[in-house]
Image 1 (cartoon, rainbow, N blue to C red):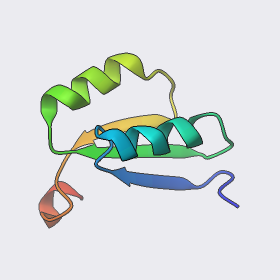
Image 2 (cartoon, helix red, strand yellow; image 1 turned 60 degrees about the vertical axis):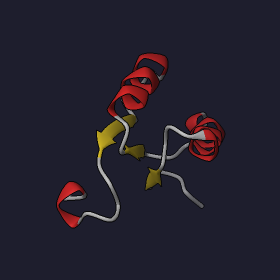
Image 3 (cartoon, helix red, strand yellow; image 1 turned 180 degrees about the vertical axis):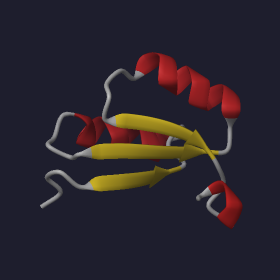
Length: 68
């Protein structure tokens, strides 16, 4: 269903976001885009995640300018 698709995970550095990343990381999803407002947590997550399909961004879904 999600093969070669791009998914966006908001709140990617909190418990639910971490669970979603773990669930989809070893599937055939094309790319996983992870958004977080917390720079420190995002950096910690970046150091633990490896792979070209996972991209981490700082942003808040409530602010349109951080999503483009």
